Image (tube, rainbow, N blue to C red; front, side, top):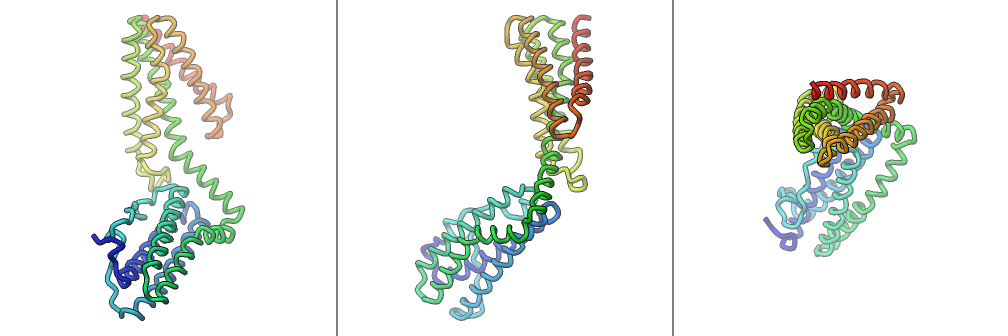
Length: 318
């Protein structure tokens, strides 16, 4: 690996050419991954890719005038000091915000590269070109604004916001809600059965934690392995699995924690109150994000949870 300060003017131009080509491919990759979900934003990245290809053409013309037709392949990874970024083709499941932030980082690094390269260039024509490209890279944020005004109309923005909301529902809210319901409801029976069978708060706490963590692991794997999201559009299985697993565990742990209190009836009273709070929270989430009327959601959740709650008490007292 060679240090940037040791590069010749010829090597700097070769590095700039390969960098512009790589960035153009990255923007084209982003556009391709966003086209179906966010077509207006995809057009922004398409035009930014075309801008990078124009930069590469200008750099290639300058190189050939000065050093001939053969251009050695020198990549950023061959030069010390450049940050290694995650490849664009591995970011196909990234959110629009993460892709935009990644692009902004690329432009900032390119600006610094061209400013330093121009300072070291001896040929006035090369120095002039590198300074122009530095200004162009610095202006890409304003270019994105102009392209946004051109492509991201109010209706397009509304459509993309709705698409983001649907993705958030499919990838996080739905599996998280299913997990919260499963953790809150399925752990009621073993927890309260253990409580009324033993009247031991510590043993009840252990049973509750074991049931919660076990249910979270099981639910997380079940959701992640249910489908890969390619056909259903439900997003990356790892995200869905983590949302379902974590919320399942949270749903069960909530009413297990009170049994850290030594007094049995105090712990049971607090746990019962928490159960009703959890069921109310689930009802609100279904109302807020799943377009379910609140009373209907509350009735569905409350009836199921109450029956499981009674089953636990009945079995524990048997």
